[in-house]
Length: 332
Ligand SMILES: CC(C)(COP(=O)(O)OP(=O)(O)OC[C@H]1O[C@@H](n2cnc3c(N)ncnc32)[C@H](O)[C@@H]1OP(=O)(O)O)[C@@H](O)C(=O)NCCC(=O)NCCS
Image 1 (cartoon, rainbow, N blue to C red):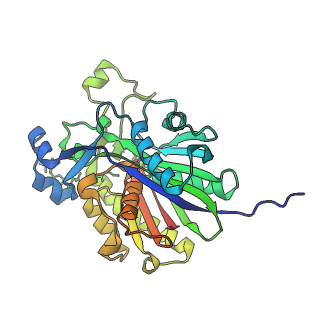
Image 2 (tube, helix red, strand yellow):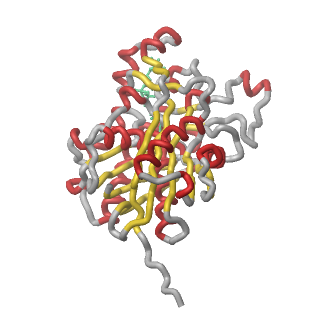
Image 3 (cartoon, rainbow, N blue to C red):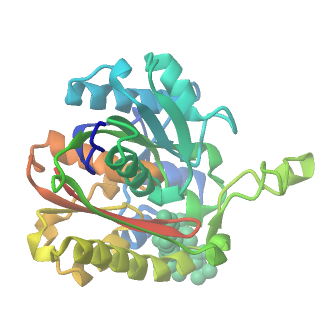
């Protein structure tokens, strides 16, 4: 009888990201809304964000990031067992964006599905991928965080639309020796705060009607101050939990890659965790909040710049609508 396979580790073997070419600056918002560059920068740290062209859907952004991650891993689409896409802005309600990507890249051996955990989607996706690899169900998994948030922004709501941008980030995860790759994961949710960040229209509760469109139900609604209070506390809790699970402290961490929601939130998390500024990866000033894409974009940029190197211990932490939050600790 064949001996059962022992539990395996899962590591990142490829990282890729894509930012659309079109730049929306704070000066552009000054022309559209009653706002100022000074207000946006002082409250959020954001100076500009990228916006998909009208002909670019979420799957198009996902494929750009995917091709780069596959090239970085040195594998072909046929090598993938699973394609997992974390997004709140899928091309359409169904089929999944992952199925659309599977077809277009020719990943003929992969099962494909989407998950929704808002800005924590990448952390949730990597956790699922790690479990599939550890159990022996899959050997190579593609995890993509991707959003075209510009399609669900209310560009008359100045407190919300200035925060968000579009983009995609992808990682290839492959089986490895236990103790390498993903060292710990932590996931949490609290649906009692669902009304802090949500999109009311277009689902089964409120199918879109002409009246709904007039009421702008097709756009994101956000209570920014409520989220702000929760975000720092939840992200610190998640980071501490994942470090505890691995028997490590922040002194053992080479880089912190936080979800890029707001520079003041990032700074709050970083300082409470006692991580020095040079170890925190921050790109919110020119990327904005790209929700589930924000961590893999920041990770991919840091790798391309030569900041993050093989063997580094990287702490990733996110928070978002749901509410959802979580953390990952990875030996790269
Ligand atoms: C949205 C956010 C930047 C607002 O910052 P803030 O310092 O809390 O600002 P306030 O909510 O106190 O708003 C202050 C004033 O600025 C105004 N304001 C809001 N957006 C503005 C803008 N873009 N330009 C100018 N003024 C603006 C408000 O209307 C308010 O005016 P009022 O006092 O006359 O009512 C902040 O709450 C935030 O970042 N929250 C977290 C949001 C988030 O990260 N969401 C995603 C989670 S993944």
